[in-house]
Image (cartoon, rainbow, N blue to C red):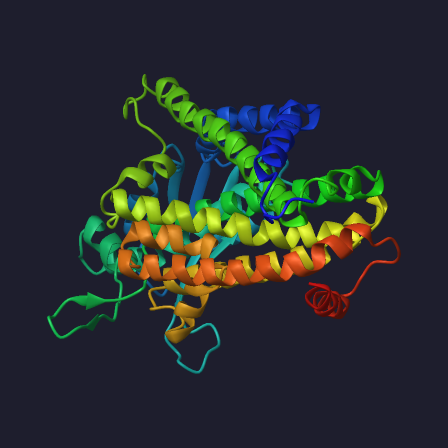
Length: 459
């Protein structure tokens, strides 16, 4: 057996990559991902256009308004007439007698396409209905679509305050602005008067969430490939033959990096298809009033207001942290695959891998959601999420691009991750050979430490 623990790594890497890239499963997976990515934006655009058409109210031809204790019908009429969905609807203000007749007779006829809006103002503060209430009535047996009635109800629910303000004499645009666009934010300042916050914008949240999902998908795929290959070769005794000339550490490292290369190949093709999808979508919509425009999800990655910290240094650091995440989870996947002896037991063996990955992803997602709500995250807890190799690949790359993490801290994260991954690799090296030769029931975590102790003694 050769002296260097990494001798044979290159051969293992080349062989594993070549076999994987030629396999039908990899080719089919790549084609499926690329087709989905290529169709994504055009399909979403078509669905969006259909939704826009569906927003037009068709089953309601007339709205009756009854005022009870308040004079507001003119304002309501103006708002409905200025709304694209309701501008073609006839509006009539009725008295109490007509309202009763509508409820008793007209609304419930099968041909009726009419609804009644009873607007009442209750001034008694002790009354449970205190305030201005919009009560919408329609006939259960009429031709009116309940979903469209709900849309009108939701419209008044959202625009009620603006209507009330406009009724006091404030113009419609100002009323809508006051009722919808008031925000309250708290900012912390450093000694130089600069804003210090880990809060992220909605656009940054979208970018961060997209990166997290892509990273999670890639790590899941890479880990499953590593574990599947190892348990397959272990079950067929192939790996025992390989170990006669290649050290265990070279085997697992070669397989992990080969799986990373496979995932990056698939990811590269998928990203190319995704960008092409954006161009196709822009061409499809070029005849509209807006003209050619790339989807917001893509343009956000190049928007300086979103990726404020993007430069050659932060991009390189982000990629290194991303790759460190693959290595960390790859070693865990290799151990998980070697812990079982049969293909049928692989799902059971991957529980440890899945558990660690879910914790890492949820730590990152929790911090992202907390930051998107305008807060500074979890204080000191932020740094725990940044420096843990199980969570850092899901959040640090995007935070580097946002300028939330400095390049110096990014380098520190790389160093800490490298140390922890080296410790993990050392631990794996003490147990891997014993795991490969082990055949029996699935091992538990405590058994791994016993194997590590035995492995160190034998050396």
